[in-house]
Length: 270
Image: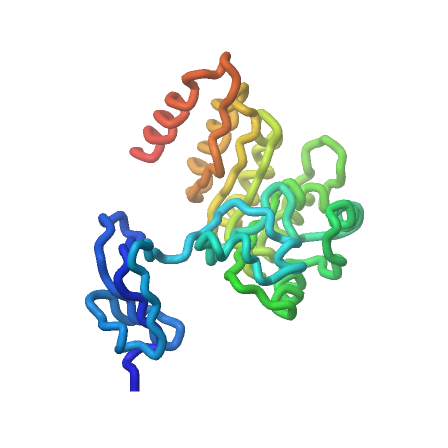
């Protein structure tokens, strides 16, 4: 009897801890890595020669738009062939919650993209649909505070009432209970407008051990304002903050990236 189901041998191993790569072999049993070191290929029912290749843990893509494509095609070959084994879906638009005008808007967007029929309104419903189809990779979902705001307040640009903020918090809690891992935002410029709403929802996510992800979209013109608002979320709620990408372009913005990185490093050092 072979000791392992699979032995990956002869590759350059990167273990994900920050250590330098090293030559080694990996033994896998019952779908889990159970040994790393010097392992002969004969020790596995199946042996994979990795000479000339790099062997790493699966990559996590923290900023994706795979929501509906995964339902349409669970093979997700465009991801797994690049080594991605976990997608975090959602940004300013997420698979849930869907209700009223937001649901209709989401369905119309799906049609325009030639997408799937949307038969869910909650995160639990989406995962049920995805599991029925099957997926080659693991999936985690964001919940969008911008979308929740539309569900509760509508499309009017006005501050939410205290009662509406409570409803927003309830919807965030429901999403976290159903498997969401973070509060995810995307703004075209300047960041969020109503801080009390965003902070209230971020506090809920923080209680569940989630994080705040933000797409800063000012292309550099408002990068410092957007960054300051993300930092405020962290300071007032204690929630970890992940910035999806720092987008700075245009000659008038040359050099701003250095200042942004310095500001981020200074906050992290506190």
